[in-house]
Length: 329
Image (cartoon, rainbow, N blue to C red; front, top):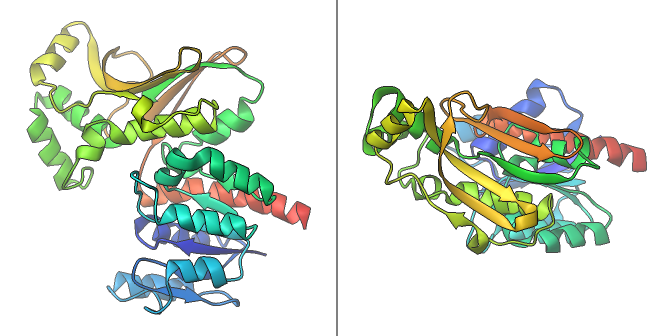
């Protein structure tokens, strides 16, 4: 039996809890916290009751128990850190992850901030304490891209990686192309459907895609980059006319993130893409093409966001650790 604690009980945290219950996974949750309250129970928390409380707008636990308390005091094997992303300094998640690794606890996170800002440090801290740091859910949601590159493509040299990393932008561009909507009209529709935030800057200016490139560059390609190294252009100035011109060439426009390791290139920008290219996916899907020397070109397509989809990536990381945790115990 592997014991975990969950920090963050918003849509992703609740998605993880529901998956654990639905799949009857052999995981015991001994700690749980969100920004307002927390729970610690060595015998295991009643996840169904916690979900019911949260669904009713109540606290998930005790207001006197903080996320830091759960990290420091609970008895667990793995910290599951799924609090909201802060890309300025990575806090408070970065502190939680450091503390858990310092206690020789494995960490699984969906939080892009700490991995983008401090991956080399966190990797070294995990190695020094003999534990795993897993972060599949930080890039492209349900697509097992990181695992595929680290495990399935081990031994390959990756010469280029490029794709659609942001579902909000992809939805907006899809709708602009389909019905000649203006950017403003497509954005309003995306907001109504819950695909875009009230402040969509993070998505439409290419910041989200750029952060994902930094994670892949540092964690997979060992490039030691920062967000400042990414050349970035968003989609806010695109017009229906630009998409019509692309249409005349049997092409369309997508916001493409690209890494060329040998040239040190990291960029995010709207690009004209042939409609027959596998990266031309519809709606909120993500798609990434990886160019390798041995395996050739591979394209991964799937849902890049959503509570269930992100939970899929987190659960995959947890079961990866559990298999090795049991072997090592």
